[in-house]
Length: 293
Image 1 (cartoon, rainbow, N blue to C red):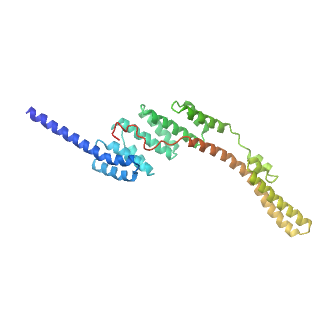
Image 2 (image 1 turned 180 degrees about the horizontal axis):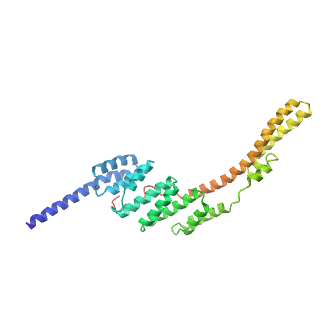
């Protein structure tokens, strides 16, 4: 009797082991497609796998790969929905991995508010998150503050982060301090200087535009004066009207040039800093070896 019982248990164990091994083997091919960058094909294979193994032991791994495949295909909403469906009760490390990539996608979408909420969730639910992923989180948070031009907050985050490389931290501190200390040019002064055509543009740093404005306005002023002196009053009136429009445009252009140059300086510095902080690759899986990826 005992012998039969033991044999029955062995058969049950062997069946479960064979089923799990078969399911894992079926996941090998879509995982290979994901690793080789064939994301459209991996989506089809992973969808098929999950359809036939809805309660399989590798369901969470397949869901993570499927979500990242969708993210690579720029189907971010589908990816977020799948990642949100991975529960901590299943596999804690894989859950934290999913939460990180959820954050990664929010970062790519520039959703600052949602990003901060997700960041807090990860901090509470995943205190033992992989160090490399934590470093990426710091970098993404700093990058979003820079993107929103919240310079003081970005500088605060750089100074508080213990995970950034010293080289990157020093460069960001230097660039952020430059922007914070930047003294923008005055649009009012630009408009006042434009009373003399072209000076407002020269003040803004647009020498070519200033030279053009000076030549054009100077030409029509000369034509107006010449016409009246020669007795061509009608032509003089026409030239004076044109010059009036050009003169007002010159003043507006001087003010606008200052605004644009101020904005250009800030945007260029922002973009330069953002180029130093790359979004984490969607192929990062820190639990790759543990779960057979």
